[in-house]
Every structure is written in structure tokens, then in C-alpha cells.
Length: 112
Length: 118
Image 1 (cartoon, chains in turn blue, purple):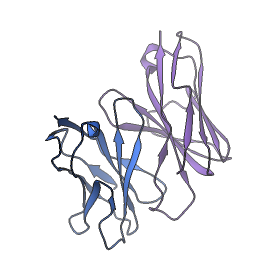
Image 2 (tube, rainbow over the protein chains, first blue to last red):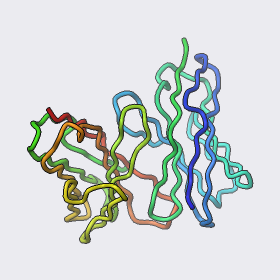
Image 3 (cartoon, chains in turn orange, brown):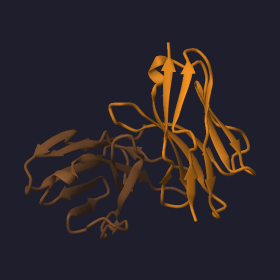
């Protein structure tokens, strides 16, 4: 069975601080991709970062980095130097084949 | 980067009418498109998977006669909400993935359509 779990319904972070959003997954497929998306209040889904199951290094994209721990089946998103514009819903997703599975999301609020 | 265009962004219609939502991949060929529905403060709920030239695969509980999906070309999929009712009011969002080995292509989303049925 394929499953994505985000255990933090809501998170708060002080502006300029770093924050980690948790994501665990379960799949029996040996090859899969892990993705994080940001959804601001306007509704669009913005692709942030990708990690392949065979990638040896953790993915980084600007202020976003993915803490990939394959043995623990976790793919946490780290946002460094939080900005007010980072306040949004964040979704973790997994693609083991041609299907995408989404977590329930984490609402991040950046406090000035 | 890959762009998916979804129209309209907002639509208000009367109960009993039908509404068509278009989803286009602008700079890549999308062999597979997905249609999601999202309720406020909830995750995306997959409605159906649409493959070019074949019938859509609907998720359990989604009425295929109510939510008609057509994927006529590699760049266009449409969702038609037939005989809309107020309970169909929701945020509908399409997405597309280009061809490629499993795992290494992100899902590209349209900006969504907010449907309100009065």
C-alpha cells in the first residue's frame, strides 16, 4: 500500500528562523520520487523540491532543502530563513509509478 | 519550466447547468492528466486519472456520468460537471505529468477553478 503521512496540521515559525515540516511515506516500489508543494491562500500548487529514491545527496533548492532518510522513510522539508511569504499550506507527495499520493498537508504560519 | 493552464479560474453557475473546465499543458506533452477536488483546508482528493486517447479512470465514489473527463490530445483535458448542484461547489485543480521514468517528473498544476453553484 502507498501512503504519505504529514503529522503536523499546523506549524508556527518566527520570521528568519528555520522550520522543518515532517513527512513519512510507505511504498513497496524500489523506485519513487518525493515532492513538496506549496499552496498559498490563492490556491495554486507550487512545486518546490524533488528527491529521487536513488539520489545519494539531499536535494536543495534555494532556501528549501529535503532531509531524506531512506531507511526511516522520511522526507522532511527544511525551510531556512523563513519569510512572511512562506505562510501557506505545504503538501508532501510521492510518485512510485504514474500515480501521485499526497499527504494531508501542514499549514505554516510565519510570525513577524 | 512546465506550464499548465486551467480555465476558467472562477465560475458561478445555476443549479442544473453544466460547466466545462479546461486544462492545457502549454510547453510539454502530457500523456497523463489528473483531476483533483479540494475542500477548504483539506488535501487534494483525486477524482480521476486521464490518459490521452482512452477513457478516464475514476476513483471510487466519483460519479463518472456527473464528472465527464475528456483527454482528446496530449495537451488538453477537460472536466465537465454536468447538472451541477450546490454540493458540487468546490475548488477543482488539474495537473499533468510529462513522459519519463517513474519518479523523476513532478506534477505540474493548473491554478485551479473555484466553482460556485447557486
